[in-house]
Image (cartoon, rainbow, N blue to C red; front, side, top):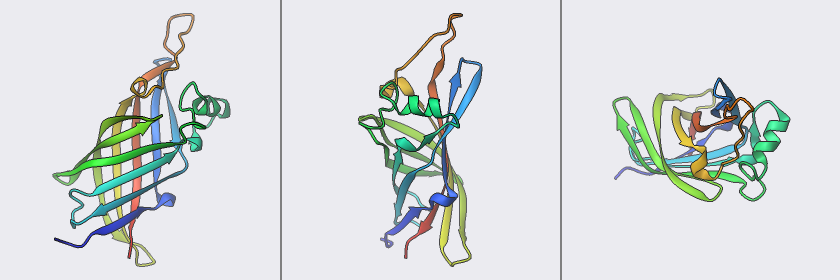
Length: 177
């Protein structure tokens, strides 16, 4: 068996985004500014890597302070009571040049399975001789399954916030010595 290699997320070269429909006609995009992750693997091609993610709910940013505060409130994430969104992989399977990442995501103490399509960007060595690996992840959850049930309907009958949340992340990991 190969040696286990540990990779740590490089937050300065990574981002996590989400998109949700607003009034069914447009999309609101938000990001989380604070997160950490690790990837442990025994394979050169990252197959069967174990991946852990933690996102600080309080770092949510939709470019609108009132909306951010509403999202942090008990109507949505209840950041004070549930400060982190967590993910733990159950499988990381190579499909061609890319991967399918499956695991459990926990939001507000509710854990559900999720799958991400993962595009492998490759590996490279930076100016400081650090080995890096890049990945692009996309997935989708239903916010209502996680108790994010706040809803409103306009006078005309339009739903204010959609149920499907599209998740995407562009992440770069640094191999640990």
